[in-house]
Length: 225
Image (tube, rainbow, N blue to C red; front, side):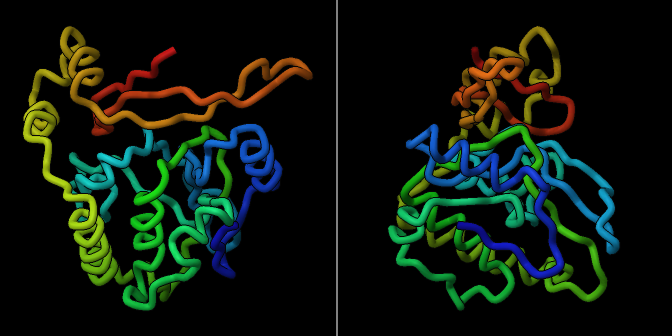
């Protein structure tokens, strides 16, 4: 299942990729891209962004909120590149909340996170088309709605901030190669990354690999093998 607005676009290989991942990795209930695309009005690719990973803890910490400070924001979960199984959809009641006219997608992610982790795949899957007079341009209202949805999730999960991580996140030591790897491994977020193995043969397959990251400029992320 997915949610694509009329003016946005999938990549030609998106549905095949998603179907292949879902059929091979039963534990994956929803996934999205680590390489979200921005299309222009005519459908040409303007940018391919890079997201270091997706983490439930990072989501609860507000690192995927559009209102987060740039140096503390990991990225965003792109609606146009996110797919989920019907089983997960049914777990959350099978509906889009009308309480969030602009941030309905963010609220959907919040409710998904109550039941399952989000997995990221390196392949671009789709993108947002930049046009005039879009609802998403109303960023202030969207951010307020997203914050309200996040607070509901925090309350349900009895979330509290990790003060040690906050200190590590803001520490200048994290930008020094000597300390960076250790800080990321011990205090960073852990996401689930879907990678392609044996890609140069007919025996290629998908594999899940954990990755640790903080995700701010100047901080190199560390995958585990």
